Amino acid sequence: MEYLIPTDWFKDLPQWGLLGLVAVSLYTLMNGADWLVEGASGLARRFGVPEIIVGATIVSLGTTAPECAVSVMAAWDGKSGLALGNAVGSIIADTGLIFGLGCLLTVLPVNRFLLSRQGWVQFGSAVLLAGLCYGSWFVRGSSAVLPFWVGGLFLALLAVYMVVSVGWSRQAGAMDAGALPVAVDVAAESGSKPKLPRLQQEDARSQDVAEQVTTGSEAQPDPDSDGPSRLLILLLLGAAIVVGSSHVLIESVTVLAVRLSIPQVVISATLVAFGTSLPELVVGMTAIRRGHPELLVGNVIGADVLNVLFVIGASAIASPLPIVDSGARIPEIFLIVHLPTMLTILILFRLFIFRAVRRDAFERWMGGPLVLLYVAYVVVQFVIGVGGQSPPIVS
Image 1 (tube, rainbow, N blue to C red):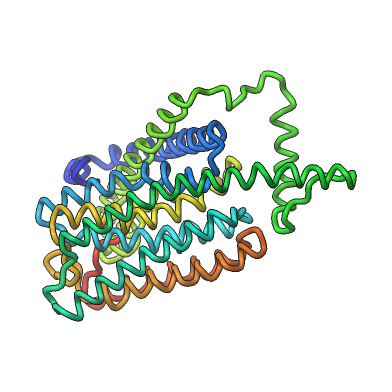
Image 2 (cartoon, rainbow, N blue to C red):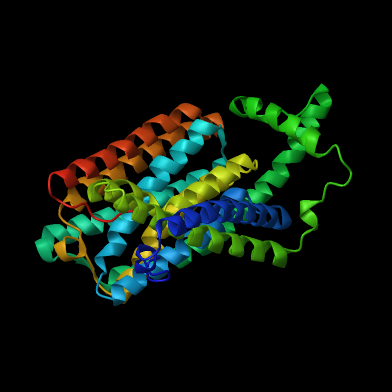
């Protein structure tokens, strides 16, 4: 994002200007997230597409496209190694921090058909990336790179993923349409309401209360009355505001931290590492607040897939990506800490998917181990930095 909004511009601002930017960016960040979630959920209702698919495709593209553009421009500018560190760091933050916090805040619903398939794509793309990195390093040592053909492979897989996701969404829609009348008929015969999965009953009771309040007035607008063009514009505009506001916020706070003499290693291991995952975090928390938790699940899975296939794929097309390169700030610690952390978090997430599919929801306790792993990862970066080895820029 620094190629779109120059970072040097923030360094010349006075203290009051930076504080003003922090306040304004926080305000626009929250409003942009509201627009994005409203547009995404509206499109899902309008076209009968499951929210997890909207989150995994349109929303994820909206939050990762600027990062992809920055990575490609960095590759053209001779800083191609940044793409690899940013993509892996984003996967760790998205799955460990953002999904973990979402689990801790609420019971996340499960679409069995889509989650099992999207989850395997997420896991498989990360394993493919790790295998290519370790394989190239084993063969070529310190001169290891991800070459042009890897970028072409990833972009081809991205196209297949998008097409297959559309097919999956249609299958899931057909299955839901067939299953709902059966559930209603059974409930009618027994004289009761259709039964929700056990883990979602508590949340459903809370939502019923909220619905009674919001539907009590006849003046309440019908969200389905919005046209698809308006909803798409709302989604894209919200995504642009979220991404831009996140960059302004992080850069402003980073400059303030430097002026307050906070050590650079602390800034690198916290603010910089947290930076480009802020859009996904705000969108995820907003989705939960507005009653669309499946958007968070889809956004996390989709962002992980796109970080590999889209960000790294496009960057490798622009320029070979060094795996071990001190000039690009990717030392061997990338292979020793960052890739193993990514794989550990995704293996844990995969195990949680197995349990969630059987129990119809992600349970709250699942968020604890994921968040702890992310915190441990940040602490390790801090320790490495204190020891004199600068950690790679991750997000």
